[in-house]
Length: 122
Image (cartoon, rainbow, N blue to C red; front, side, top):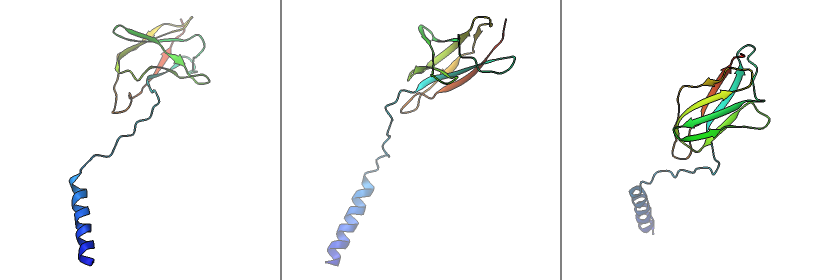
């Protein structure tokens, strides 16, 4: 009986080593933003939310980012890679256009790029 058990044990270990599968990747179902933008006043560094328009452009693609209610964060480009230019405007302030921001992805989601923009009063 010991020989049968030993044979089965060796067989199981040998068979287990043949199948070298990678650990499975478990992705979540949430849609993650490619862009997260906060805006501050250059004079006193206070966050600006009211009356702010944040637009992300990637070639022909254009999206107005949404403010997450109760926060100072504007998000957009959900699950969309690309090279974005962000334009921020508010009445009484100088409009700002960012340098290009590259949003990439991993195996499951986009990798969120965070950006802080400073607006200056006119």
